[in-house]
Image (tube, rainbow, N blue to C red; front, side):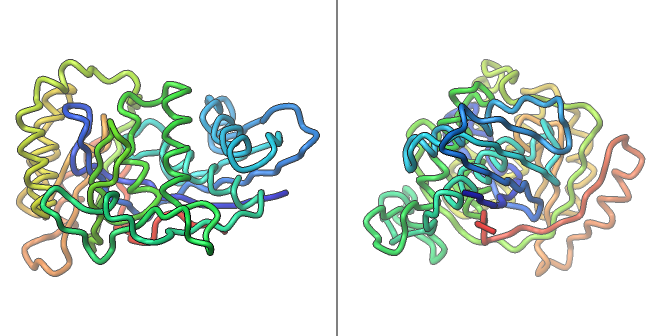
Amino acid sequence: MEGRAAALGAGTVLNALATGTGAAFGIDVETRAAVDLDPAADGVAGEIAEDPDADTDLIERCVSLATDRWGDDEGGTVRTDSDVPLAAGLKSSSAAANATVLATCDALGLVVGDGGRASGDAVGDDGRASDDAVGDDPDDPAVDVTRLEACRLGVRAAREVGVTVTGAFDDATASMLGGVTVTDNDADELRARETVDWDVLVWTPPERAYSADADVARCEAVAPMADLVTDLVLDGRYGEAMTVNGLAFSAALGFDADPAVEAMPHATAVSLSGTGPSVVAVADPADPETDLDAVADAWADRPGTLRRTTTRADGATVE
């Protein structure tokens, strides 16, 4: 009973800490999970390849919840390896949870897919649902588990082990489905999803910031700006939304806004990602005014790492 899956990292358009509404987008960095189930095993043992001393509670809980729901409470092992740096604002926990749940489904022999479109789960407040909206129809006979069902199980695991404040359904859906996703994190509801085609530059400083340690009260203080960003997001103005979000939450969470200011003349959008510390700049290839090489030059002397990548629209996959 072996299963393999991979899920995406993601960047932030709207941080959900202020109002419960969030938006994020999948990027081409992955976390991979390998799950081996054994009906005779007592419990689940986890391992994180790039950090053997890291806390494995999340991935172990994902396996346990998945086998409880769709299997026969099998135990076993789970191992993840990742291109997504831990505690860097690039949704490493969401990617690990998604990959682990899908790998467990694979080990159980379940077919994972998107099912039929469910209008209540894919339509924004303005009544629109893009052509890329993803449904969540558990009655589709071709699918045993929808990706949104698997996503919600991973979010539940993240809440139970305390690695998230909001439940991070925005991050989890972007990682699972790809594209830009807009969510109500209080209700675990997908409000909208659309494909974007951006080049991406990520600067990750050496320090780490854990989502569970974020100052929620300071984030709630910028709720009026988050409401503005929500309006922009629901109007499809993702670039403007992302940049406003980055300035507001950099101030709320105590991060330097200088990297964002340096990027603004050359990027479609730039934002602090999640609760930091990474800053993500994106460029629409159709816009001749954008130049991520110029952003990279501006950021080159800052300590940490620079990564060039792209957005992805396919989301998590069973391997």
